[in-house]
Image 1 (spheres, rainbow, N blue to C red):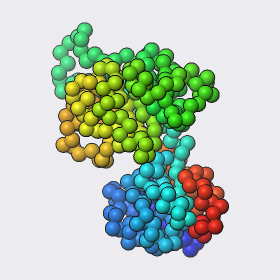
Image 2: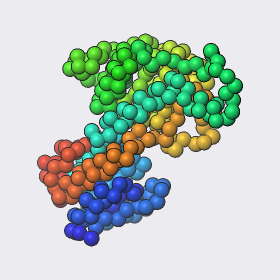
Image 3: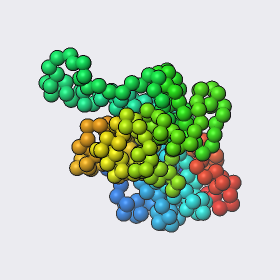
Length: 332
Ligand code: DGY
């Protein structure tokens, strides 16, 4: 135990982050594989000065109202749709996230999903293992070309830009949409700018890189899917609810689009009985885009640094609500 601060880490994260926190606070770690139950969060929050939370922990006004001493919520993720940031700001509670450290690892996975889906890798692996491979065949497991194909990026933040860089290595023709046009990135990465409908109509691959906000919830629904080419592939490594999952299931089932590669789902974990999982033209992984040893360690140390700054009243590397920093309401 060090200092008078009390901190809760809501899951086992790489030890480096915990060790940093132990230098300044009394730290408790929730060791279970599953997230702490809501009731436990509500019971415990009153004794905490800081919480290192995961995207599976809902940090809303009810939690904050019980957290009378709570100074900081350090989210172990770049996305922070699990946190009611406006409620935190109102109460002078600092919220932080982990941008930057996971950008390339996430883009690597998005591109992996793109390639695996285009070339039927998961289906082909199973086919081979199941002893179904009889001979080399001219029409065996045909997929879509990646090189020289048209990639449409919806969202050109850090991860979207890294995706564009990877696409250049495959001579892809990249178009993007973002609420903010980035002419420098257009010049540097040879990108074109277009509206979402144009991207959907013209792309061979559409990859989503937006945060989840009220504006992006169900950004891709039945209408948008119907605009896509029947040979097109949708990749989602952003947040599940950006896509209307029922509409996606129907579009994949009815071959409105060719395939999808998904790291994220409407409800996580997706039920093993979800109809989406009966389809061969969907490649699924369990929200692992940032899951490399090095990146998860960097996320742990960054979240710990942020949390320590929140406890000490200094400026963290990645505040989500910087207006709290100099506000007289900031909790000390
Ligand atoms: C994030 O950081 O938002 C990812 O979804 C998990 O790394």
